[in-house]
Image (cartoon, rainbow, N blue to C red; front, side, top):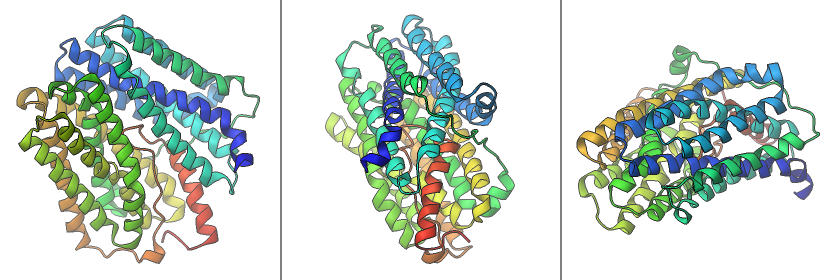
Length: 424
């Protein structure tokens, strides 16, 4: 195990600090914005522009990396992210924050894709599964660690923004100082919505709706917590536990979906998330601990939906179409994360903070309804003919990139060669 991990240990160390900075900055901005009195609609745009930049990064960053090289591109991307993190602590202005988040999203896509392609290049068939699992764990630990920094400093000062900058600079060092050869060129995302929908209607609509729900909560969860009366420490705890609960639930949900029709599992998980969201909206619990517990239950089930939908799409896709299918799903998810905060902010401003969970519940009800409807229209793949479920980084820890999907798929292919045949 040690021999397999050592070649990528420095890169994984840098990844830890990258996601620590991401976790801290993504929580700090809405909390500071709420304290400054920015409108919820404006705070929702922080997520909208970040997701827009991320999607554009997945589309165009590979061309830039091919032109200037992995190391230069990585250093440039992460330098821009660090500069923006520091600027947002100096220039406390809603308009600038919204605009700069688009640039951060673009650069985050580039840095993540470079790291993931590097891991994929250095991994062997024997070490790929361990490296991918460790990578997922590091993204989780980094995001949670960053969010849990919030209670240790005053959000009204630039100190936490400075910590973001430090984390990003440390993250730059391993790849900048490495003498290893650069990996193969990055893969650009492809999109064919008609073919994607024909392949799997449930996955196509489901991923879009999951993006709407996750984008709304991921961006506005901290705003909800502040308006619901939670302290800064409680908000950080709530957001961190939501990510952690989603990661823990992926394995049992995935195993269940490998045994029965994935659409039933998708419908069931979405239904539980919908009921929990509706209860939050209706009950509006006053106890911080009860409130946080309910939100954590929401996160545990909501964060299992993306990988189940991806696995269902792969069940009906030919192996050579995987990249095209996964690329389309990635962009649909990105579109959803653009829509979610855009409509979530005005709804929260008009109805109140708990209406955030009415929005997520509506998205999850639609997933449940459509999944059950489609299960009556097309038979499920036999368990032995299905693609294998693959654990994904938590949706609230990062948006998935094409390179992480390639890394995950490579591990699936290895299992495929040694056990059963997946796909159609």
